[in-house]
Amino acid sequence: MTKQLIVPLLLLINTSYAQTRLELKSGDTVTYVPESRNPAWISVTSDEANLAVSLSEDGKKIKEQNHSKGIKSTERFYFVPGKNRNYEFKVWAASYVEKARTVQVIIKESERLSPLESRFSTEEFLEDLHMFRSIREKVNSGLYVYRSKPQIDSIYKWAEREVAASRNIFDFYKVIAKLTVFEGSCHNFTELPNYTSYYLTQKPEYLPITLKNVDGRLLQDSQETLIPLGAEIVSINGISSQQMISRLSQYYSADGFSVVFREAAGFEKGLLDKFYIEFGTHKNYDIAYQWKGRLHGIRLSGISFDQAKKLQESRYSVSYSGKDGEKYGLDKVTDGMYRLVVKTFDFATDQNDPAYKKFSSFLDAMMETLENEKAGHLIIDLRGNGGGAGALYEKVFSYLTQHPFRDSRYAYTLFNEAPLKERLVMSPLFLANGVKDGYGLDAYLKQLYPREVQGKYYWTDEKNPLILPNKKTFKGQLYLFIDEHVASAGSHLASLIKSYTNAIVIGRETNGGYYEHNGHLPVVYELPNTRIQAGFSIVHVIQDAQVLDDQKKGSGVVPHIKIQTTDQEFLNHTDVYLKKAVEIKKQ
Image (cartoon, rainbow, N blue to C red):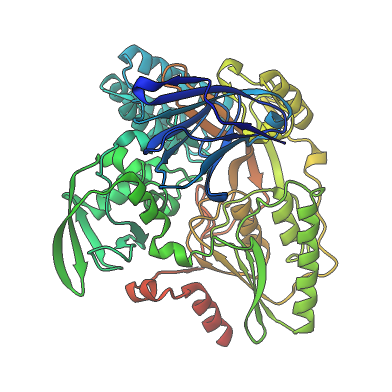
């Protein structure tokens, strides 16, 4: 059912500002027709729902957005209407339980974006810092896995000093981000209250190039700029490439002590917000770069946010990342060698999901193909697989092993009654399971983690059954492709494959851990003053992985053969993984 809303309930004509308050009822999609015929900010906000928003031009959808991670959601568009065009916004609840109840939504339309509230007292910042630590100590089972209590005490003493000197919410956020990453969990995140890139500047002061970290070198990653594609960036405004890599890595989390993902993510995810929080925006950028053995320098003017966003979305490396299209597939590499590509495990929720059954049929058909073709070599390509449902990675591994296995040796939380309920923000996963508040969460946790032993609450055996191999399993030579983006269920599968098969592991260290990780159930807490949201997973999982000499505690899955890319291979879009696997097969 679609509810159409055309006339705003409140229109302040003198300020060219419109505000609409509406009810989003069960099953509704609200359609909003913007009033302004000039560029304007459209803000869609709800304290009760996680919202998604789309924009259509003349009936064709041109944009869809869902940036907020939970309820207390704010989505913003910078709307630039064309002449003689018709536009409409559609708004709907993105999380499951909110589709079954009425929620309040506010839509604002204004010429300028109101400033982000950043005037907080030192006392308010310190109160939020103390609440942040209290949340971690009472809720986070992974807090002391990789860090000792003296180490945690030490970094919080540092944080007290930094927070006392914080001038605004961005300074405070930088401190909280470092605390988040220090713990060592790829599921950790800390976000400012809204999609903050819009708040950094409304002037054309964004970086006019994109960057990619290729084995510790920052390469220019945009085709339509004055700096050659693939040129190595030496410095920007006097800040060296190594400083940029190090400082941006402090905003991104990994399991244990792995740094490969953290050092890459800032340039793939953070050039629209984290880069400017850390280094500021500038009218001009003085860029030094290496090209064909010579050092060059150039001054480029900053560009608008919208231009920077388009530049980031169209960067050269994205066109070869393989992130679009089907989420899994099988292709023939050479005679006798096939490749199973699984880009994600987010396409089904459990074994009762029709998508799970479709995937199972696909894997059965794959085995028939391998048998009929007498293929003795199979590549499992997990590059970019950030995780998803455990049932899906377990299904894949059942075709690769001859031995029964479990999801984990054991898993536990620190509680089965949620602490600090007043600060909880319901995550989409809990909402999907009908959990509407902290007390509903208690009931949910008591079902999954009923047994307490020395202050820890353990996963029930029925939720961690023995999984038998499939009737047909692959018995030839396996190859495993991994990279720094492999995490959660993706890295869990990678650890099992490396641990229990003959796979030759090719690539880069994964973001997710080899021996253990915090996962399964994400929670989100909101700090009382700044409203910064901090999320992490509450279940500590000890994976079913053998102890290996090259796998130290705190590492991701480490490849047997580390892949490095030359400048020319980057320019040629050479798949160095496939090249290496074919070379090994020929030996």
